[in-house]
Length: 125
Image (cartoon, rainbow, N blue to C red; front, top):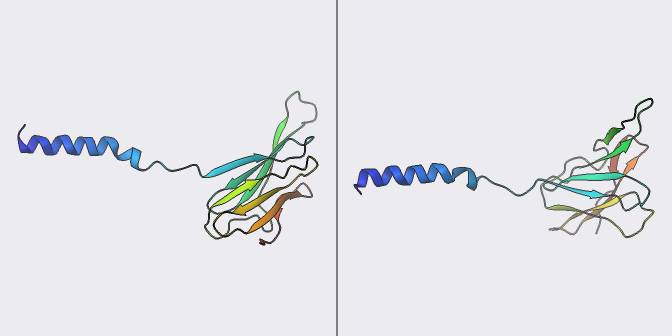
């Protein structure tokens, strides 16, 4: 194959594989609250540590429900970049979850406060 054609083949191959190089790991993690009579799921941004939550709610006069979501509030908003995870306790009556930074070992407990927003305690070790 002539050298000029080889360049075009390599260029075509590089362009075809370029989207694969941009693939990243999932940004969010989801975890159900351990409380057995609560249908709440927490959402975590694994890089910033921001925590939100959603749950199913009934809608008056409708056979369908609604998704009720609670935004990040005090202590649950985006923080310093890290590698965060959510961990549920084994306590079946616990409505909150633990947010941990796996690099620093700091932990917070996050929960929905007054059915308005997700709040987290100050990080501690």
